[in-house]
Image (cartoon, rainbow, N blue to C red):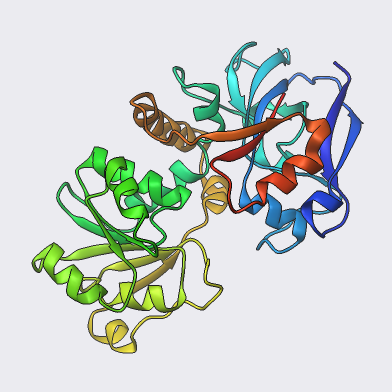
Length: 328
């Protein structure tokens, strides 16, 4: 294989308008490199935002779209010892995921744990990893401890519910629509309540005075303000998104007298700092849950790369019942 089809863009704008399908040359595989044939690549909201130019960090143009994918090693360089032909791996996210194949440095390639489906592997590194790390890195949570999160029906929120259930944590999940309550309870949520001005009263009934050590915030604005009052002294609110497009709000007195911590989390930054061994360990721990049936997200439709514009238009529909992906 000496050529590959890719979905690239050389300017920012509406994702389906700036994306173009083109053929690129593949370099020969060097001694320390591997050739990866991509099998499934996801289209995430952050990918669309990157093409639009609205994401927080943008690659230099021109660029290949996408971050999350699973591929198979098709060829290894003469000096590569820890990867083998046929192994499932994630290509380096910095190279772009929406492509048929890529030549990459073996040291930058992380193999997926065995026993996963193609779909589980393709979706393991972002939402499940984000939820797992936020529940682990900021405060010490033991079985029986409470945490609270808004937008609990989001991809990360659903993963947090499943991880919490496996660890024996008690999740308090805030949603904006009542019809989401039975759905999240069926997933394993302990408590699902409406995110409104009655939240403080509801939480007193739920916790009976037990501390809430951690809040996961992806909404901001009034929702973050309400959650800040739920936190115990020294508790942490970790923000990983801003769906309301409003600043994070917290009571001034809470910062002074309860020493509330405000932290931010971006899983891409974690990956940049993490060693290959740390990434491998994280994925192994997530794979245990995935093999038990967690993190199953339906794929509504799979497109070939040649239909990239249609795929990106579909991915932006709010009425979707699942993810949109490129199947190669």
